[in-house]
Image (cartoon, rainbow, N blue to C red; front, top):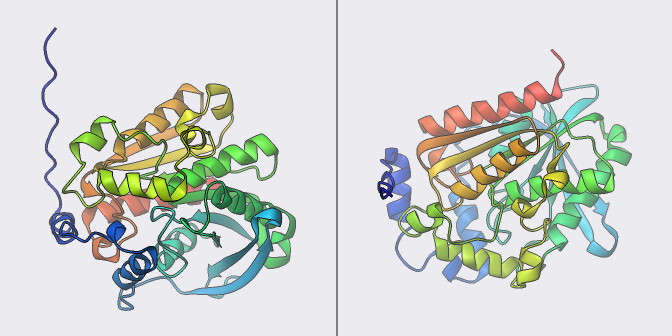
Length: 324
């Protein structure tokens, strides 16, 4: 048997290479206390000169029962009237970092670009809150939208879910939970370089373990903050790649976008393959020359990769939410 050739070494876009080199020195964001790490990410995302669509916004507090109260942001394109379809956005950043401020630009771009309102649950972060708190809170906000969205100008018959990284994981789980429990009839899920499993030994994990912004050790740390229990990690609501074909059948039209130099690349593409095997209408796109978080980070916003991937995501959401 002929040995397989070695994997291709990515040639990164200049901005991605610069980011990878800048974030390589210690201490890394996961090597400092969570509050300091949150401040670091907020600082990276606080450049007010970066353009973002204008919106009208409101805030609501959603009662999630035993899971607490979830502060939730609702945005609409500036001056928009009448019921609007909904982009339900679940943010990433390792379950530990990120919030409505760090993800503000991308949230606006996806919702406004799709001609939709946006709903953003500010779920409780790890390690203060452990799995399954986050996915239960997201589901509760989805149920609130279904029951009360019309009072806030939301068309609850046209909802799509999207998220990046662990937000992509929880978006996939959100779709699974709505199928299992009943609730939102989602029109689409758009999963941006998602976490899909707690397996740190895939080829992409091994190839990109160091030197490409998101490291293997970082993902181990994020998972430990979320749950250290192997049985919980194997649950479908934590690792959607563990779902059976029966559980995946009937899920909404799906777009999965991965990036070349990312430890998470293979599991995202494996999840797309499983969806396809289950008969789901799925498209999977790998963006070359790019690293994790390229759609989120302001420093990578104007790269060729981000421009193309953002358009793909917006077009997929718009097509799913509008009949024309």
